[in-house]
Image 1 (cartoon, rainbow, N blue to C red):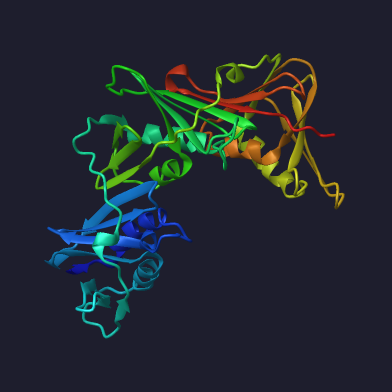
Image 2: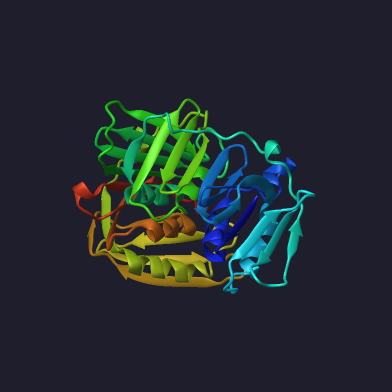
Length: 375
């Protein structure tokens, strides 16, 4: 293999690929990237056996070929040459090392490689029928559900999200056992029958990094899901766990309703979070009957206290005081894009529902959060 490639586009694809590679891979080849040069492109492939990314950048291919290279090392070296105007010259040597040098310069690097044959086999989804989706809508949905996706799998926690594709709509649901997000958007999907699959959290996180195209092609076959956006193909195994029943959780009984200015509410929560208890990250929200909200955070160990006030745009119901994990509130408000949000509450023992204020045709984003016991 011998190529010449511009540093900036190569580094852009390397940064995406490095998100797939595990920092402590137990199998040596999984710490490497596959470089494959052919035609006018250099293809880069990264995998951890569950999630795989295939991407490419333009290159002058002098001699086609393939080799695997240490991911972290090649990423660091290419980044270090970002300021050089000269393209990079990469080629494999007779002793199967990768030679790297800015064209016309004396700097040179020789990296140990592993043969292409050692790299895991790759899947080709081209024969699978695709569902064409609006990329911006899919990403907005993912951004919202990632907030409450679990960090471990359990009875009420899933380290991923339920994806439901129906005629005319896209829905995603996630939960970590303490909160649940349900995001549903009207979207032309072209499907005739509903499809429900569980997508891993890492896959969703990596999709958010893919840019540059308006249309996302999605394919599902047996135990795998494929996402293609422009020149990049990301695919992963689907989760084989079951998703908790969530329908009843979405509409808990509530008799109090507040409409708050999102940015102002978020700003005040972030300020009081600086003095919140480091263990339970507790904050108490207290509405009086007129809609004035007191936001209180205390640190029992240091006796620090922070108090802020926000006046609701509207309020219905009696006075109420409820404790929450403050990060659960700021997580929702940070990904919510509307000017105002609605809080529907009952009491300190039952779930609270937060939603952006927007038109029905703009889709729904419902966030259900459990109160925090303040005993």
